Amino acid sequence: MGRFLVILLLGATVLAGVGAWYLQVYAFYDRLPAQDSVLLTPMGAASAQPFPVRAFEGIDSESSPIRYRACFEIDVDPAQLTPYTGATPLVAPGWFDCFDAGALTAALDEGRAQAVMGVSHLVYGIDRVVVLMDGRGYAWQQINPCGTAHFDGDPVPPGCPPPPEN
Image (tube, rainbow, N blue to C red; front, side, top):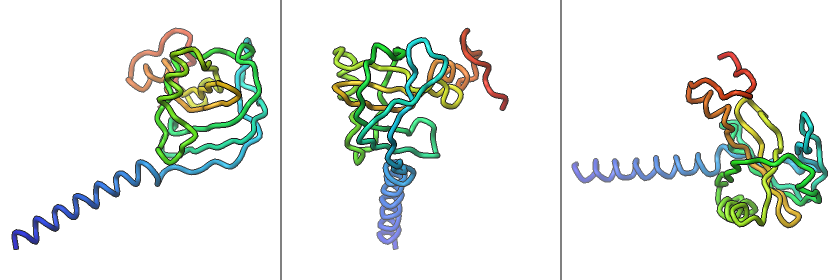
């Protein structure tokens, strides 16, 4: 009887682990339909504007505002766009192989890529960041300083829009 209970417990543990892994890596992501443009914020502009792209691949999830990832081809001069400081590429699931957060981080650190503002405050405290490198664009959403303070329950820094009412 004891062996049966141990085997049952181990089997349930393995199934729960595999289930949690599957839910995190596959279940909540949806592939996005092909798009012919992405939103980028030109230097000095108050809002983002569409820029044409090719070969768009993207994923997103309704379970979190920071699960968006995209890869595309784009012809644009980064100097005409609003720079983004503090860009931190977020890891994508391994099966979404066009997006490599480690390679993007290295390219940013080495100056081979430029981070630009896609859309500021897509939802409060979340920016869409785009990295441009060698005719390719890579996008993700990350928490900005306004969001960091707001989500931690702290007062938002000067220059932030007022946080939404809860």
